Image (tube, rainbow, N blue to C red):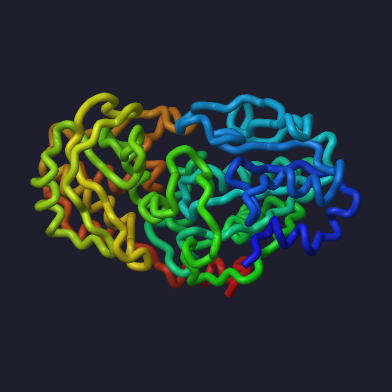
Length: 390
């Protein structure tokens, strides 16, 4: 299998002929030899790379989440400017684009609507369209594969920087396919080129690609993390720890008021496909409940293809709310540059989850199924013109 970066090197698009270009990347943008995309492209197209752009968490993935911005800088090995698109601006400015003829995107996405890389890409499409600068996406695998979509579509009133379009929480597209969809549906009009992968099939898990996982952000350390993230990211809108401040973020959930074994027993009512929940205690070193012992469960992936993480997390929320209705709480804004809407609402894509848990009647399996309902057939029909690997 070859990713778009390697395909671009072996079969350069005509657009690269003599063009000055910028590159949106971070430290996970590597080839099969773990060489950074900027170094690979500079070697193949000498002196044509003029600037590096970075998404949330910065070039080296140093910054944590939720409006912890990364500064501009320089990439010293090539003596190139580094422009942060998660700082004073989240869209490239005319000044940033003034010395380039096209902008190349090479980012490892995680297949989840709320991951901000897709919305940085959307802002790049808008900024480049306004400046009449072509965009080239070097495609990479969706680590969750491309045959399952999960979770409700985002409702228009809840768009934000963690959801800029009406797509499911787990969308099943590569970043290149998503760029094609967004450019068309939002009528951006960018001159968009996607360099596809060779040898990738939609049913492939990341472990079947022959590639090694490189963390695209500080709390995405393992490819197993990606299987749980589409659901577990919802915990960022609650007072429950999602495992930030531990070595296994998004693979555990807890709070000081939770008794682990009691929670595990309560979860038995709900189906956790592909997963095993193990009662645990843990102490986060930062973020929510820093320095306090939290009771909860660890989630172990037993069958990656069967995992439905959004359903799993709603079951966890239902069980915890049932056991601890007075201790459980939603966090208030601001969250990812949204200062008015509740964080859980922009994460879930509507107010339905928050409003349903406010009802006196406990949430059961049928309620969870209704909340996560998605017309998958309609989604795959809608995305068919933009998919590249069918």
